[in-house]
Image (cartoon, rainbow, N blue to C red; front, side, top):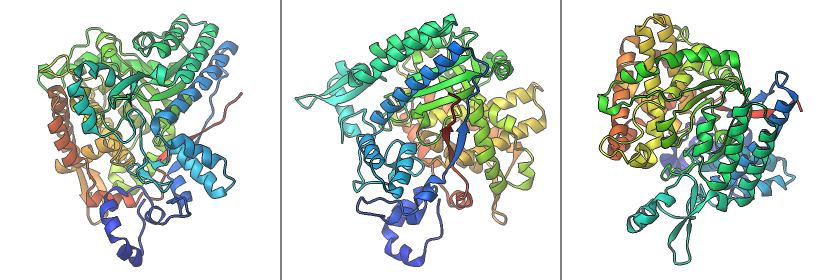
Length: 566
């Protein structure tokens, strides 16, 4: 969060500030420019840094579960912690060593630094363009998917020279290492992390032995086996077929956000969840309309796909435990999995809403943001239900559009767009989800006022996500939407009050235009266009930066404090 900077600091630091101010909307300037000790710790105001996260207690109510089900939950939480450790290994070459060093210190300052390192899974601030906040080395290597210090161009050149190795080298489930002759080889996760993957296998088999629900038992057994063979097709498919289960689980390498170079490699994460059956039943309404929503996408038919009876289950859950990638920095409120294009094409995908996480973010972050930045008239249309529905439609909309390019049905959109894929995909999910609200309005399934609540709550949530920073795909995606809406006159800034209003007459057309743009980029696999759009719209403007300064005393996100009943 930016604060006023004394004149002498500006004079002495002009060169540094000129280069860094653009990305510092979420950090304290003094804390980032004054080392605290001989470790080069840029944490003079570590308390301010920690205040970016509001602490939320997670108190899972297991009273509705049988004794065996409660035992299963405990075992799955243990497995989740193994996945969490695996993500530490993936997130950086230095993270675990730094964590151990700080944990061994008796210094109160070091304990606070450790807390922030644990939130970020390393010595880099995920809310501040991954700036290194601990250690003298400002070039600490990031994700360990590729050899330390390897540049993007080297990897691309090697693949061109050795096309026979490409499939394994770009696999979701391998790390890339150098060979003795300075070549590159793909090492499967089960070989790169043998102890941890074997432990995951054993824990899931133990949980499966207690499962009385046959679909859950089959899924757990398949997932356990898949950890040892680095192929999650079977367990991903069975996850979509879970039926009458009170316990739900996502565990393993899933999202590709951490691979900032190519978005090829999947990171380990874990969600242990308890099904909210009543809330889940309410969500089924949306499945009645999935084919109609795909057909009305604002692109030509070549850029659409037929569902062909694919599974699209929805689930509302209470989070029990979250670890790994999904717990790093900003916390997930919902997800749409699996990511495997083959599973999506053949079977479908599942959308999951984390009810207790949604509630916490709405109350602690979104409402205060709306009170600070939106006009009084706009604030009338902020709604917790709209927030939850918008999140659902975001996850739902990941399934829309193409997974493979129009011109080359063998080329995935993910591979075609490379490092820009995640930002474009997150923008698509957001904007298509909002565009689809007009479908329900046109069908008179929601009222004029309800449509306004969806649009207004989405704008407040855009500010919420922009604060995650331009380094993350979600932050970039929301910057793109914000600037596009401003350009189209759908979001209007009042210079005299510093508040934002929404032009509802222009908002629907703006969602249609942006949806057309990103869906077309994906269908064409147009990496050049994707880069141009991100460059044009995915940046901070002066008005936006000034507005975000007003939020500096509000938490940016949440951190979990687990209060188990066992």
